[in-house]
Image (cartoon, rainbow, N blue to C red):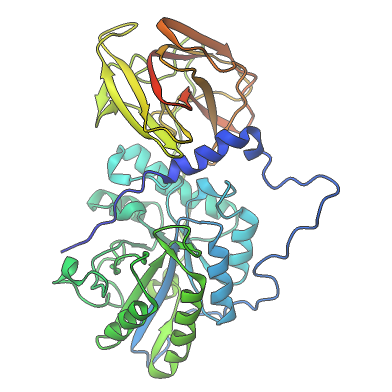
Length: 463
């Protein structure tokens, strides 16, 4: 029986929260002016590259792959530990999150690749692939790989975000040029043996389906050093392949974080196991295969001048508890509900966003920050008039984002100030500056940063 991961909905709001706090600083990340203290040395500086591993060694009994998901900046600590031990690793990094606060920068990823740590794909925006249409799923997977190849990093391995996959997703990964794709939960786990009673202890080499590479459940706060060691020892009795999955590398920062000392002590124990036939290899060395050509999926063209580019701007259509092609996000300590409101500005329905249990942060509703199926497409250099009708029980703040050509979303400065609470329908409208040259889409909405309710309807974005 398979133990699936839960969708961690806080991932996207985490960077949206930072964008909300720093605004344009997201765009300027990495720029340094004159003066100030010198930057700290790079965590990987002075560490030798991992010895090249082009093929499976003869005489091995078990192959262990150490994989790290999501591209968190604290994974540099894990990368440094691997290099100190002379061990390879595979880092699955969403290309759309590269350079965002709290995530690896492109320079850091390139340094890791230069040290022969494998970089793998993880979609552009860490999307739950079965939850989006075919075109969007293909953009997430294919464009992610095209981004990496465009940066000079030849990715061949992929990992499914949220362990969410089916036959359609496996075909997409294959067609986008990857040689393998790792999931989670279909191998025996010492932490949760009852969740996978009929599961094998190891994956086969080569795997029966390279686009459904099996692995134990991910490392979380319930795991101990002894659990990691026992997971390997159990696999050694069967031979084959054991991919292990980590996320954060930190002390107590996350329920899916491995403490650096635990990782170090595990690698201290694991490294000498090579003498017993247990070797550590990156995923691409186990699966093999050539680097295939990229396949980028074109995003929709900008709407013609004078036409509303917001899909379902009247919020009449609903899907899974939210207006179709919209998304609610939150950050900080509060609770959020989205409901269909029967009193609308136009048509039958409006969207009611309510923030309760407020301690900090905020929440917002806006067209989906995706790669093309929902986000309003725009043309570089053109100015747009955008707006929304609303009522609110508390002041509400306009928010605006744009998507870059590689699929990353970033905050865009907003001219309108905080808007007042109003018990009757009020129209908020403003005109953007010229769209940046690398922008391909825009999304906007209203944010609550206190307890209250905002009801919105009839969104429009017209060039």
